[in-house]
Amino acid sequence: MLGLLWFAAAMLVYDGVMVVELVICAVLIAVLAMTTGGAFALKRHRKTKAAVALLAVAALPAIAVYGFLLYLDSHPIDMR
Image 1 (cartoon, rainbow, N blue to C red):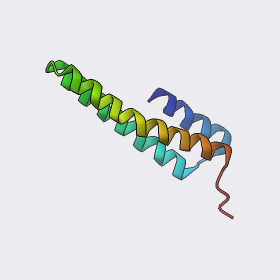
Image 2: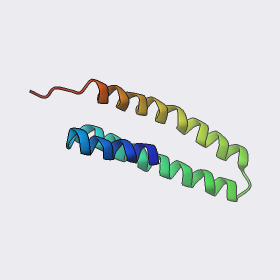
Image 3: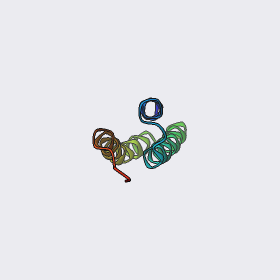
C-alpha cells in the first residue's frame, strides 16, 4: 500500500493529475487495505491458513495491476 501511495505521489509531482492512474491506485490501495484487514480478522480467529490463502489470492491481481501501472507510467496515454 505504501508503494502504491509513493507511486501516486510521484505521478502527481512529475506527470500532473493522471485521473485514470490515480483512480486505479486508490482502488487498489483500498482493496489491499480491506484484504489485509480481513486477513488480520481471520488470524485473530485462529484461521491462519485461511488468512494466508486470502493474502496469496489478493497478491496476484495486485502485482498484475501494479505492473500495468508501471507500463502506463513508461508508455503514457496520449489523449490528444
